[in-house]
Length: 122
Image 1 (cartoon, one colour):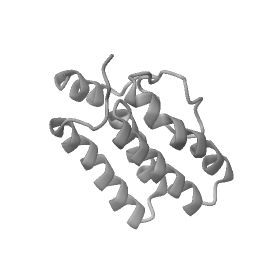
Image 2: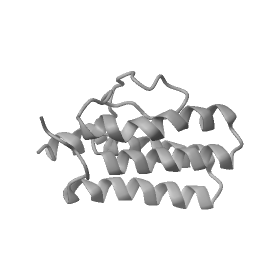
Image 3: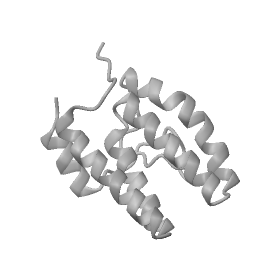
């Protein structure tokens, strides 16, 4: 069995870029665009426990910021279980991570992110 703790550095560049874009848009109060960058970071970080948990923490904080009870409640179980599922390699590939989608539903990966993930397979 393979265990997935932390993202390889060659992928973390893309993951951190999405988080930087999230922070930039959040500071400008462009909440919808900021959220889209969190979703993209989730797709990239989902296979690794550390990054997956980090994104769910940011999504929880975002839910508090916008006072969205559904997002807050939806992030709590994801925060507790998401990293564990990543660690053992059992994730719904492409899932964007928000409370607006079922937590176990696989989703289509945006083309640009699929290229990044495919070209950086271990």
